[in-house]
Image 1 (tube, rainbow, N blue to C red):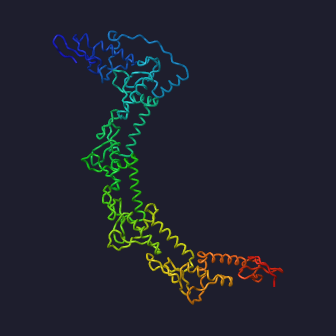
Image 2 (image 1 turned 45 degrees about the vertical axis):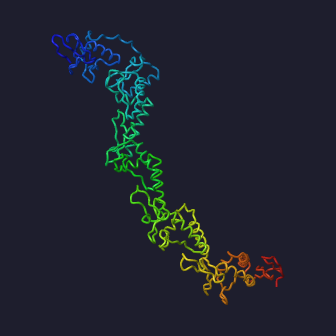
Image 3 (image 1 turned 135 degrees about the horizontal axis):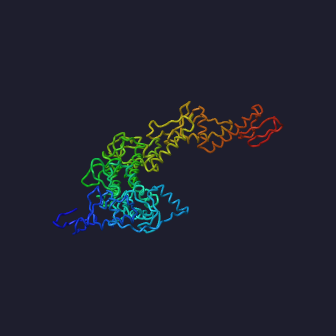
Length: 573
């Protein structure tokens, strides 16, 4: 502070750093007993006037040296040579209206009564209730505090700060605003409150998905870290993982993986290559970061969902070990040996182990369905298409996959299976009916001995084992309608040559579904059965209609009897 130069001393003031070419006893004074700082009298006088203008209490004055908090010696304040007492400000009256009192009560509750005083604001020069900063005791009105802090919101947002750097309003003061005053400003200012809430929410969001050790954060009041990939300032950077120390922003991580999606779709990959984006670094990223990137990116989440849905569709009918997939999840999918198309997985035939894509299996099964439909084969069959010398049959799980999963079930295989199941259910509609099937469901159906045509199944008479197709039975029943009408009941003999065995009633019922005349006669038989089942007229009083071919009957009990089917009347007895 003092440099010896002989008779005169070259002295530097601790506040204004001006060199003084005068004697030390006349120009410089010591400011505090707790420090050795010296200051010129003129600068000390200006300092005291400035502090008084900011309404700092005299007993709270400190050393004018920046960063020194030692109290200023009282004799410097009291000596008239060092301090000229300012003119006293007129006494300000406290407003007595209700709104002013409520505002004063709110400020006292938030900032404390000792931090408030009624005076002229040194910033806007308006008479108002001033709020004193706890650390330096500088006071200003509420509007000035709020507006000054609000001016720092936009630069802080651009610099990706997490907290506002809010110094005191006094130009020469290096202290910041107290926490109590900051909370009050945040409650009063929408922009400050929004900034604080958004900054804390952003950090909490990143820390919720990625552990805190995986984030690179700057000091809360300093600008955020700069991303080495895009060069932008961010709130936080995200580390790749524990294997490497590379860290970039969330946007660059998302962009890095989204750029892989078109190539991955073309190569039918099951997953993206989740590694560090630095070119020379091939380390895998942490699972937490990979899951977080999926939650942020819609495109990435759609790709992962599509791959999972495709694999689940392929595994729904075919077991996992029957799918041919690459060893690595981010490797290109296998090539089909038949069509050369790259797929996410191939279907392996359980009978021979050969694999092909579902489209190739489906095309072959579609051609085979036409042959099976023409030959009335009950079960779809086909042979391996990978090698011409392979004679193995296509496994049932591949057929089931083609029926329900290939092209969402809208294909020739599904149509054939649906038609065949419907036809089998129709033939098996009557459990008492005996059917003759082919020895192998994958071979052509049996041949009818009457019409010499292949059928899906033949209907057998159990007592004599004679069999015929349903159309031949319906035609045979149509030729015996007159005898049935004369007998007034469904009475068929076997279709076999020279066979006199009676046909079961199940065959008659089945014939009604294939022949309209047989069905019409069955309606008359059912009506006759209802007339015979009348409890008011037992069988003793029932009389058949005398008209030829009529199946009706009448009831005795009067001189004239009427047929309840043809309404023919005749005299009783």
